[in-house]
Image 1 (cartoon, rainbow, N blue to C red):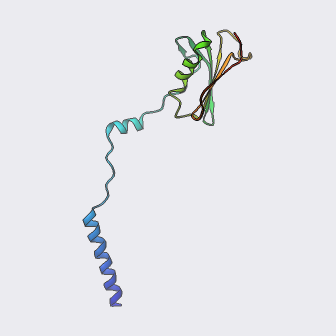
Image 2 (image 1 turned 90 degrees about the vertical axis):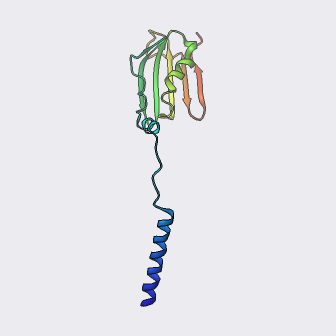
Length: 132
């Protein structure tokens, strides 16, 4: 029995010596800038009716890490610029963003002139549906 007590006392002494030699681990210091960046809320998705130079959001909805935005634009050729303005703030929140571009006044029931699909893996893919 004395051996067991002596063995236990030696182990406890060894553990105390190691704890004193290496100290207690401390949490890493976090700068105020890192703390502010972590607590900053992500930008909201585009809202219906939001107007930007040359384009307006007509519908916007999301589900299951996917965002769909329908846009009226005066210049369909600027679709890639419009898509970048929509996707850049949202890229970390969604796996896929679909942007449908229509001319102003075009019915929502009509096929859009263009669709731009963004995914993190493939980037931007533009499909032209109308030859105008």
